[in-house]
Length: 359
Image 1 (cartoon, rainbow, N blue to C red):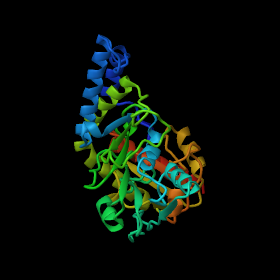
Image 2 (image 1 turned 60 degrees about the vertical axis):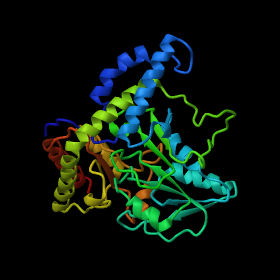
Image 3 (image 1 turned 135 degrees about the vertical axis):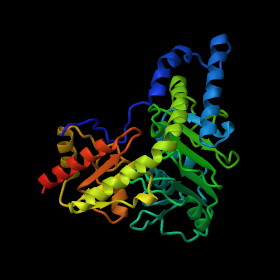
């Protein structure tokens, strides 16, 4: 088997347009835009242009955007900024571990947390109104399975006081009509790591949850060159997604169909029509995910396994457990822009081979 490309992990190379910009950006974007001086004035203009571009491409207002240098802090900022002790925090059983951590901290401070159950298809099934003042933490798409939620229906059914959205897995999903805060991650559009976007629509209710003495809503410690690269990557990625999205969704369905047809006792999380095209989570019965990953790596195919929400990636997945699936033989496939049908068919053959050898 001749490998053309073996990267089917969630990490993707920096978008070529962003990579081409970076050297020049580091040369121009070194000055503090808040200070006086020609260099600072130039960087202030560059920063404003980048934020305006990101806002336009994410259907936001520039005034709603805060740039954060640690995207994984996003869940805490988005949720805790709206959360008070007398508000119930509601989130699903398939949310990220960082959301669970916010819930535990809220309970330790005297608050209440309600974990919403999901059906076997990954959709939130616990849709009764909470009946109390609440903050709903809601994913647009699950980073591990790709399963999307009908956010408008969930919001309408639960009717929370405030809504904190997590769109860090899929920037191309439309925002709902109602929301108060939202987070995005530049890596989801092939931007550089280390840039997150915190969107704050309800600036009256949202308060900076970090210790602070000033009026800043975030630490404002992000890298300007990385922000410039993120803006360029987002614009180019969305242009490509207009044509790539349909093709990648078809490749997603091809993987599901071909691996089902060979009777390997493989179970998929969710269905392709209710998931983003780029992500597939599967479980091969009777196998060990870590062993499958190592065998695939030996033949130059790199995939993910285990939970996508923990630092130790090989830990069992609470997301799959919530769906009623085993996680021992878990593989996670990410289809990046540019992947070809030939590469996908090689991947299918490789997975078929290593699963058969593992039994």
